[in-house]
Amino acid sequence: MSQRDREKWDREYASRRESGTPTPFLPRVADLLPQRGRALDVAGGAGRHALWLAQRGLDVTLVDISPRGLAVAEREAAAASLTIRTMVLDLDTDPLPPGPWDVIVCICFLARTLFPAFAERLAPGGTLVFCQPTRTNLERNARPPEAFLLEDGELPRLLDGLPLEILHYREGWTPEIDRHDAELVARRRPD
Image (cartoon, rainbow, N blue to C red; front, top):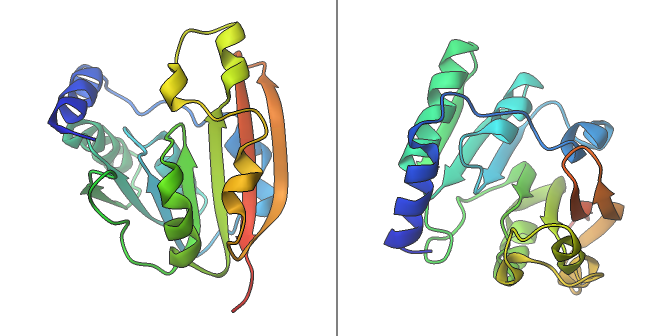
């Protein structure tokens, strides 16, 4: 990312008063996720997924490039008597926080180079939750732009050679948000 990306997202979050609701995918796969342990929300913005994870009993760290987005998450967490840690992180230049993590959530942020780090930072038996629109999304939506879309069928291949086994994979339209997503839940195999 860049300073320009930080400024863009800070403008986006400047007038936001709440984090919003989690993507419909996350509650649908809740039975595959732990309710205790350490969770990392990657590029989580204003914290809609981090707060959901904290409500489930996880010890959550939220990383994002936008200090304003993180401030929204911190305010909402405090109002709900939840504790989350936040960290300003440029995922193009900064490494992910060290693990081990019991859950890593990355929703609507695509950096293919992060997949080895996801696997490395997960605890054995830890869970990766990933969701990103695919190229088919352009049939109905102009956003996100092409550079931020997965190729149809690409997501499982991003796990090739990594110690992750797929527990859930789906590609299709998510009716609640009219977006064509690739959804994945994978577990790190024991060492």
